[in-house]
Length: 200
Image (cartoon, rainbow, N blue to C red; front, side):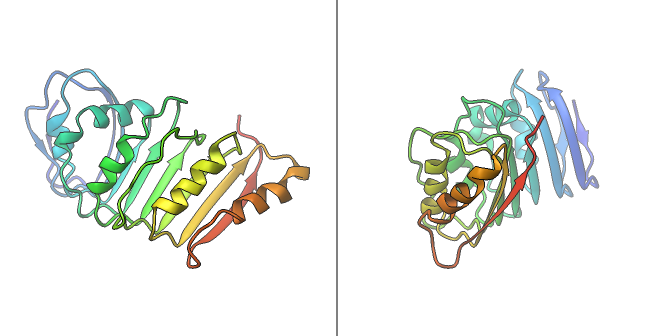
């Protein structure tokens, strides 16, 4: 598989990582949506994302692929938005701090899919610049509130947290809202909650 596309601005790519990427030129790439299943070594493709501004891992397999080859990830100075799909209870949270250190100008961090609690506290660094955190499928599972507390404590620059809550009964919404709003956070950080119908 070759990417000799120096003028390409948007890439949506789904594939089993092939045996090789002989040539990768993505110098104009602004946005990439990747769904990769680990087959062989994706190092050249990963290094080709240097200039990307918006990146989406659209599957847990993609996250795992980048985690295994994290040493190949360049400093992504242009990236301001990162979206991560969580599709398994066994989501590898330990990769998140590594990736955040590679994105010194990241503004918005989005989690798609149900948020599962991390058993360990992670340090994202006092200089982590993320200002907006979006949780697109917050279901109030056991331990998830602790995960929220961890984000608010360890992401010091947060100014806005947007929560889409699913599957919350009407008689639980007030207590759900209260619990979220009582999570300790910086005075400059606002939390917005939107209740939605249960996902299919």
